[in-house]
Image (cartoon, rainbow, N blue to C red; front, side):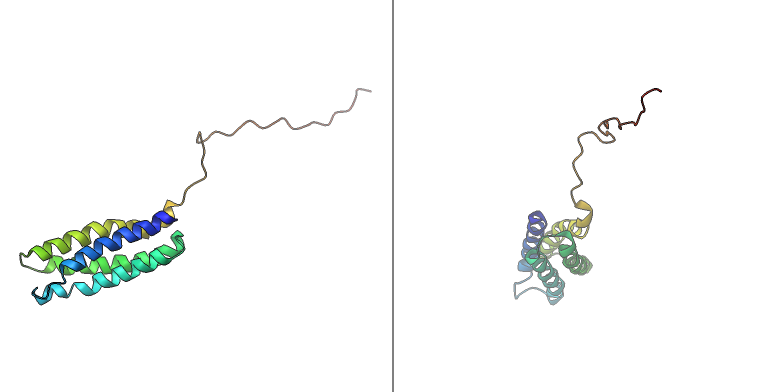
Length: 135
């Protein structure tokens, strides 16, 4: 459970690095447009961190974060210029995207009951049989 919250925190911190690279007031305005979906994704991940850590609680927030991160990355990739802040933001958002995607699939990560030898069933004791003494 705590590992889902830790993953959400790691992804949020990565997005924060991307957002920070877009915070310079001298940047072109089209770079600043990508800040809004990054901030939305970070907010959703914060909610995931504050949840009880169960996959069913984390997943809705992770799906919202995934939508925001995808939107931000698409906006950044559509910008046709070479700028260090753009490269840093794209790298940070892209690296967080994998972790966020993993959180959306967290339900399938629930641990299964341990089984030492798959397909093995221990022998069952013989069932008692009723018998009658010979006449």
